[in-house]
Image (cartoon, rainbow, N blue to C red; front, side, top):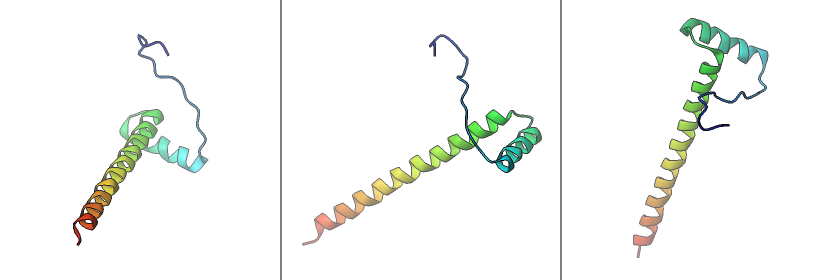
Length: 71
């Protein structure tokens, strides 16, 4: 994609009709596009995943520190 272009590339994905229809209902209720709804849901999913990984690393680091302190 040209860096000067403001266009978002078109992507394809597969999903069940029931999930697509639910996304359409949410989009209609919020006066948004289905793409916007799916994008927001995916962003939130990725944020939660990254947070969980970060927290797991912090817990691992604390456990390692405690292990190193024990005589």
